[in-house]
Image 1 (spheres, helix red, strand yellow):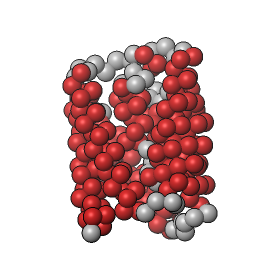
Image 2: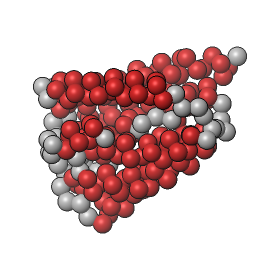
Image 3: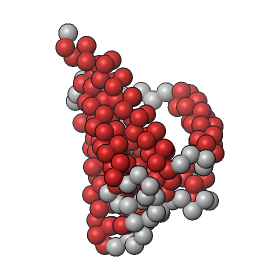
Image 4: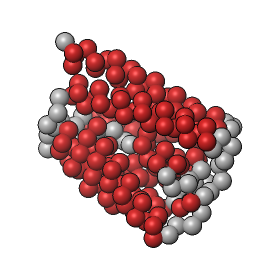
Length: 205
């Protein structure tokens, strides 16, 4: 929420999209979190790694198509009823995946906003911060009954995230858009490969 507030001051949050995305996203996250409890953790992480790898390749491909295009288009330029339906539909799908995998969902939300709704990357990142905060509420509720929450660890992670957010926000201002897109794709791909390697062995042996 702090990150969304910080980005909103720079006019980099599309509030209508974020609210609609989150309405169905919170329900999807709650359903996904319950589904997570039925699947072994190693299988969940292995599947998550493959999903990240796919998103990385998809982001590279889309970035190549729009190498120098970072102007608002599509739903970022004119938010119609069709855009509202897109936001609700994508929100449900992203919420389901984030709840199932137990992650914030930025790796899905940012590419969806950029390539399916026409958001420039900085607007997509800012909007995703608000969406993540709202959707995570549904995921936490779904996980709360089936898992122990370490509030001390959560607090420390949040504190570190605040410092990382402020630092990252300053750094991205000096990075060209196409390099920023490429960096996001590489980071997602590396994390995906590490998860696949780490969890393939427990599944095979």
